[in-house]
Each structure stands twice: as structure tokens, then as C-alpha cells.
Image 1 (cartoon, rainbow, N blue to C red):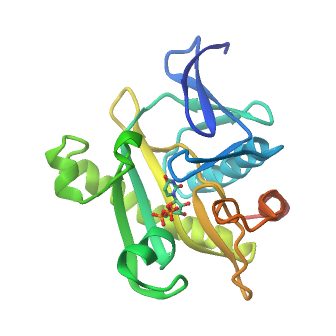
Image 2 (tube, rainbow, N blue to C red):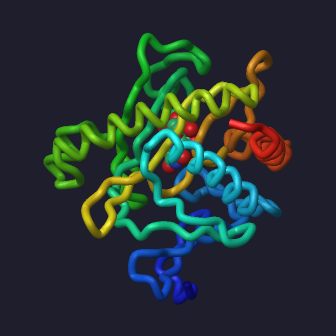
Image 3 (tube, rainbow, N blue to C red):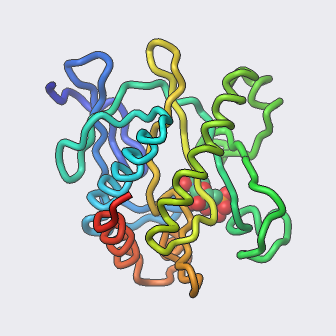
Length: 238
Ligand code: UDP
């Protein structure tokens, strides 16, 4: 397999074509962004940590029979993945109130929720990823009813799997964002990444934040937290 030209450059990673039409290579950069790119930084080794963290988690998700784009990690920053067309939905699961949910509904961060929340945002930077519901998604031809049902079922299952993974390394999964893609034969699989960039992770016992909120909120110890998450994941047998 040969890496060819870059297809797309996102906020934290790049996507490359390969000589295999069904395969891409993703490369994680050290960039950190927040608030739709308004806040920017670069942190040494962040790309390496997210690549390795995401791959440990995706491997575990695969073991539980949820299909993902992961094929193989080929270097510290590069992973070979199945080619998909990303469905322009940010699928968010919330186990505990935090972030934009706390702000929007006036609920203090850390408040327990009566049920797990599934939320969709329309992935569109120009519009600032607006919150949408199932009907918006269907009306805008983003996904069909059947696809939304499949995505929702997979998202709840992924929540169960990764809640357990993080519990084993003493972290509480507060919320996270995932993205799905469609393969050339129409199958929906988990794509993008799962990392401290896309999850809120609080230390069990102290509620210390071990995720991108340390960057968003200028709390310091940003890379130390990512290093610690990676260290614990790599030292744990799941
Ligand atoms: N999230 C993400 N990318 C986004 C928006 C949110 O990875 O573009 C993640 C975020 O890290 C958090 C969860 O999704 O774990 C819920 O985020 P929220 O809606 O509270 O938005 P935020 O407060 O991060 O703006």
C-alpha cells in the first residue's frame, strides 16, 4: 500500500489517498483547536498520543462487534483506515451534564442525568455545527430514518463499551462525540477518532479533568493529562 496525495486537511488530522481505492491513511497532527477553530495551539506529541489512544479504543470496540474504520497503525502518527464517506453528523452521547448542555439548559456541570442523552449536530463549520434532531436530519437528507436508528443503536453500544474501558483506568466518561461513515458498499461504520480531544474524562474520586477542557479553559497540564490517559490505556489489559 502506497500513501498518495492529501485529500483533506481537518483541524487535527489529515486524510491521504492510497493506491488502494478502498483505503485511506489518516495522519494526526499536533494542533489543538477549540471553539470552531477560534482558539489554536500546538502541543508536541499530541498527534502521536491521539493516534495511539484512538487505536487502542477502536480495537476494543471492534472486539465487541461494532464495526470501525480501523485497519492498522503504521507509524506513531499514521493509521490505515477503510475509506468512508463521512455522514455529516456529530453524534454526541452525554452521561453527565457538562459543556454546552450545562450552558444551554442551565444545569451545573457534574449533575447526574435521569437518562443517557443522544444528541445530533449538523457537521458544518460555516454554521457552527448547529444542534439538530432526527426530523431535521431526515428533512435535510443527512440520513434516513433507518440510518439514524442504526447510528443511534451503535452510539449507545459504543457508550457502554468505552464507559467500561475508561472505568478500568479510573476515569469517568462524562460525554463524547463520534462520527460515522459509509463504506462504498453502503455499510455504516464508526470513523474519525475517540480520544481526549473528543471525550470528557474526569478522574474518579477527584473529578479532575483529563481531556481537552484543560486546553479550552486554559487550565494547564494539558499534555500531561493526555500522556496519563495513554499510559494507563497502554498498561491495561482489557
Ligand atoms: N465535541 C467534539 N467536537 C465538537 C464538539 C464537541 O469532540 O466539535 C465533544 C466534546 O469534547 C465533548 C462532547 O463532544 O466531549 C460534548 O461537547 P459539548 O456539546 O458539550 O460542546 P463543547 O462544550 O465541547 O463546546
